[in-house]
Length: 104
Image 1 (cartoon, helix red, strand yellow):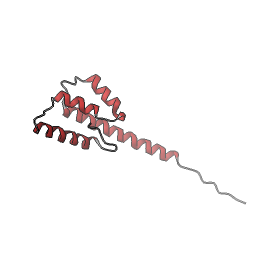
Image 2: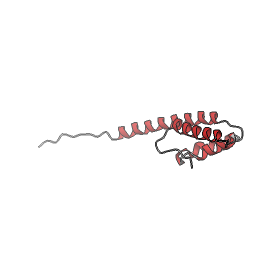
Image 3: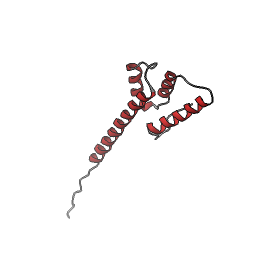
Image 4: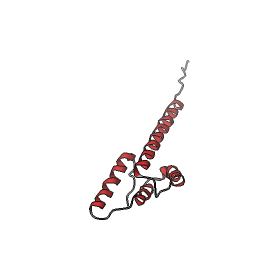
């Protein structure tokens, strides 16, 4: 079963997905566009569940294209990376310690 690999970015995952589906088409097993969209949504990890749910509720999966989904995923991935940077920055600021000079 096709899944997004741990640490893989959305572009790499989408490229792998496209290569597989193109090869299947060449072998005479084309997959309808709406089915590709559904399979792609199922391949994402749990951390992407809120985005998948939003797409399923807001869009008609029989009409939405892979390009639209890809663009939406890229935007979401950028937002996740930005949040991660902010979290690291906040954690770094919290780790600042104070050194006291001892005198005898």
